[in-house]
Length: 605
Image (cartoon, rainbow, N blue to C red; front, side, top):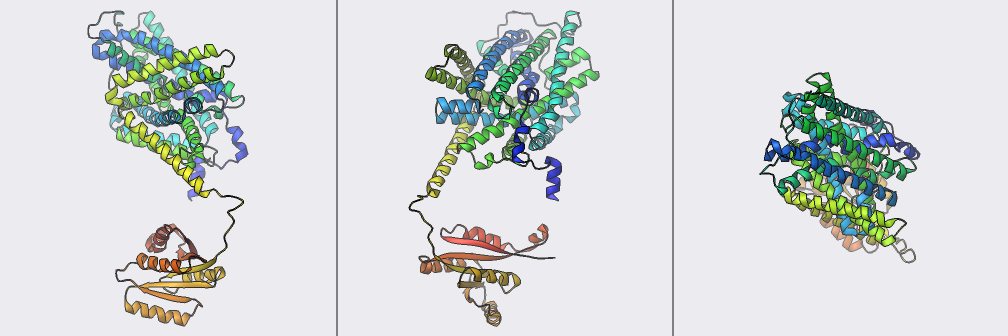
């Protein structure tokens, strides 16, 4: 039954040689890998206005120069990450660039930041998508956490089905969002210039006494949240069809052009229409209502906006498993992240991402504004390290035309570093947790790496010297009575060794006497050792007996403990029986030089 449900939800298992068919073309890749960046149009302008409104409505005109600065940064990032794609065609983005050019510690900071950023991407996207729904249907406001969690489950199942299948389904609403936003921008612009704007725009260049440089920098850093997700294409190059670098670079440029155009249009409409931040209505919602009224087109805009905000998380589902794979390959994450599932995706990475993001949604109660600052600062750290790594690469290798490339990355590094510092100084109260969490992540990377190195050192053998050592075998069988299970285990033990002994642990003299009499009558051909437990414990007397046998025979014999266990026909029937054999196995596995084996006996009905 479990297998049938899994097949229904995820699909049939795919052969390894079908992996090439899971690669993405430019159009599908644009939808899947750009959904995060494109969706930020829905809240990037709003984040700028939320800060500026603190100085009054007249200060909202500053959104225009701030948006222009954000667009300039977008152009720098697109050009610099395009260079990264051709320099590192295997993907990995900031992690690989930092590892190759700066050092291990920097690469772990970049990798850790990106992993945290992708987790936050899912949490922010699901929360922001829920906000769009509750803007259109305020009655659902109290259910926003459940709505966000339901969408995370949906995206998890879609991505477990494979990259190509999820791309085919999810590309439709993503492109519908792009078309709808451009339609909104075009009609909204026409309405404004034909006198249809419902409110006067704040006077441009008005002097506002309480607008400080600090406030403007804070608004700029908030607007930079629109740039999150730009790096995803460079991280996920292996997902592209050949020639992968060329296709990835083209996808990155297309994403930058679309994002820049939509962000510019929404910011201008918000300014022209005098839109102000509202807790119960997003900026997109207000612009759509001002342009179309509360008609069917308004609800179409809200619907596709909600969908794109949810699907923005799909960028993380594409990039997180690949980055986790690379970190696991370098022994900084558990090796389970290297395993491909039935549908050729890195299923463990997908599931881990979903669980962590769901926890964040629950903890923050689906509050998008609380998550976005963490989300943005987490991505600008790897932005900066990636630019610095590329600068070092150009200086070190000096390829043809390296001076121009160095200038681009230098400008990019200084800009992203400045924004990172602005985030820290202007939003420290909201992002301070990053400076606790990120070192913990890097520390865990180091601990995992040390474990794998130590394990490899202990498992490594010298092929010339380390030959198999042949020893005898002393077999110990813990028994609680004389049953078919014990008969089955004794029969198997006799095929392993002539030195077999059964051990019975009794709690009173009467039970011990009866066991000895039955054993003598049964006469299985092996000796029974009887131990009395005064404290009704099985483990302690058994452990002392094994210690004694190991002390006497450990030099010439292996010590093997065979644990008899019966297996019920139905899984739920196991709950009706004591799990002594499982507890015994778990307890004895801690023994350094004792082999522990379970001998199953299957019940038929």
